[in-house]
Picture 1 (cartoon, helix red, strand yellow):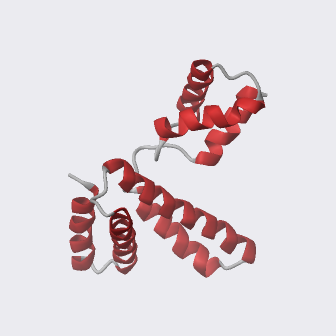
Picture 2: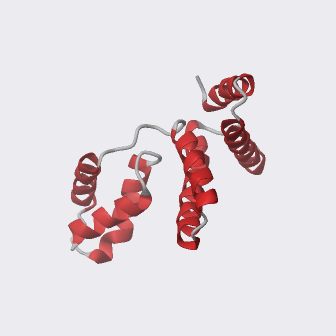
Picture 3: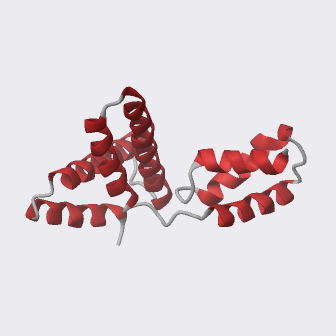
Length: 147
């Protein structure tokens, strides 16, 4: 089942169960997907859908950090709930050990030896872990292994 079909089914269920927060997040994701499809002028591939989902999740995580810094506990709780709902639609996340293994393999594949090769390594890794790992964690591991 595709992402849009799953979102539609979950949206109907959320309406029936009167889950306002979940319904709101699903509508927001659907709108983001539709906007992206309109922008590209074609239906989205699975990869493009994952990119949109990842972007939405990253926005929520950034907002969460800002709300925590500002001491806005009302918005922190709401944003945490949104993040939780969005994560239901993301692929299973890689563990740090699995990610470290991919980083090591990729460094060997591209023949990187110093931090100057960071861009080359990141460019090769990100398509492999798209949606399955946080970019900042990947960045941290790559720096660690290139140091």
